[in-house]
Each structure stands twice: as C-alpha cells, then as structure tokens.
Image (cartoon, rainbow, N blue to C red; front, top):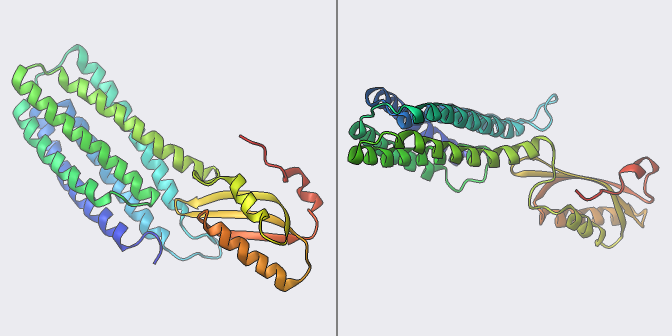
Length: 295
C-alpha cells in the first residue's frame, strides 16, 4: 500500500467524525451565548470538517494506480488539497478579523458561563483530534493537523475569554482574543502555502542541497561531469531527479555499475526516482542549461 496508508486514513476518518460532531454543538452554543469566539470557532470547525474530508479523499485517491493518461497516478492531489486547505485558513482569518474589528467598537453582551462550557468541550475534542494527527509526515495530513491545532488554540482562547467575561463582565476580550486566533491561523497557513506552493511550482525539495547532489554524482568513479540537472518533488514524500551524466567509458556493464552507484547515493538525499541519460560528451543542445545559477 502507498504512503497514504491505513494509519493516515483511520486517523483522518476519526478526526473528521469528532470534528463534525462537535461543530454542531458549537453552532448551538454560539447562537445561545452570542459569543464571537464561539461563532468563529464553529465556523473554523466547519472548515476543519471540509478540510479533513478533502484530506481523507486525497489520501484515498492518491493510492490509485497510475494509468496511461496519468502516469504518475494521483500523488499530486495530496499537494493540491494541502494548498486549498492553506487558502481556506487565510479566508477564515480574514473573516474573523473583520468581525472582531466590528465588535471592538460596540462589544455585545456575551453569556460567559455557557461560552466557557462549550469552549472546554471543544478544547477536549480538538486535543484528541490533534493527538490523532500529530507526527505524520504526509503533507496533506500535516495541513489537516495545522487546521486542528489552530482550532485548538481557538478553543483555548474561548475558555480564557469566557472566564474573563464571567469575572469582569468585560465582553471586549471576546473580539480581542478572536484577533489573536486569526493571527495564529495566518502564521500556520503561510507555512502550508509555502511548502505546497513550492511543490506545485516544482521547486527543489527543502532540505536537499542541489550542489551536494551534483558533487555526489560527480564523485562516482567513471563520471566526468553532470549537467541538465532537474530536481523537484512530486508530493511531500517523492523526490525526483533528471540529469545527463558524462562518463568516460562505452562499456555497457561499466555504465550499469555507475548507474547503480549513482542511484544508491541519491537515496541518501531521499531522491526516490531518477532518470539518468549517459553520454560520452556533453550534448550541444543542453549547453544553455548546463550551469544552474545561484538563487
């Protein structure tokens, strides 16, 4: 089975059930208490439910076998889903900030006791879901995890706001904390958008130094040069490299041995797939792209 394994699927399915179930509780609580924090959290949990549904669907579909029309299969769905999740987080933050600024000038009365009870239940539910998704390497699952983490902080803020309102009667803390929630959402979404956007634009994988990869290839005995090198990621766990390798032999067995050694060294850089074209002399058509300038 592929990277979107049973563990990822089970965790996402359980997280979706808990999140969607508690979302209904928060909707009722937000209507009864009039709290912006609860309303924001309820809207956030609705988006979490959509994000988890999208993530679960992407994990399932990503394991489908390649076809003639889709030779890489559906791995990119993971990245696309993560990018969409990031955009949803930005939208959530914008809506919360606009509503919070509105309420700063005329804070409405808020039912602190009910708000606190619902917030505590929400905090517990989010902590359970975050624990289920924590530590998974799949980018799409991590995007869902960041959704849940931001919602966990949102629930914690709701509890703090409820306690303050109950003690002081100052309901202005409700929109103030909502702005803080939105700021965290923007920070977490920027990380997801940056990583998923880099994959969609076929940037070199973060943490893999292209210069070191080239040096590793050129240090293989029998290799006299490397050019036309392209390194990118198909998804969060599949890195791909294309390169033209100049060798000093025409012997087929020797070239095969060079190829095996290069692929072995590439595995240390987590390059899972590579296409290597072997030449005795650098091809003239590649002269324009032989040198890769620094960023």
